[in-house]
Image (cartoon, rainbow, N blue to C red; front, side):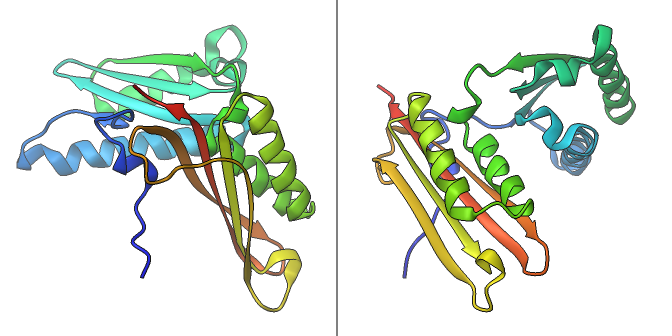
Length: 210
């Protein structure tokens, strides 16, 4: 049997980091976790795919919560005259009940981030664009952006077929067993009209970390 593990959790403390950084005792843990989940849900509902958000990092200190939003479209998150960022800050402070600092990081090459590539392919599938064309175009754009390798897998009732199947596109090399390898991974879901859910998994290899 295949022993599968998430490529990001496998590399924690080597070349990946936790998305939430804080320590809590038994009494506060559930409350802290619920607050973090509420913030992530709020960002997803408010901005969704419009803002092309790659990740949200949350860091707590006793009197301040720092939230860093990494996005390919910083202008959408910040809003006109900073109104969007200010609205988010007010909403976060309601959830945490302590001052919140919101940092927005702009990503220069969105093609090198697995979440953005996977979501882009999922949106194309939802719009009934050929899955093969979406996979090949996504992989080619990632390689052009400077990746060492990319692997894309799509599974489900592809093109509305009666029987589900799995298709993949691999370009370059993706050494999943090399722990030094800097590999970004994300699994997205596309809601295909009339054929249920289609899963999209993307691995992007960016080179070895010394």
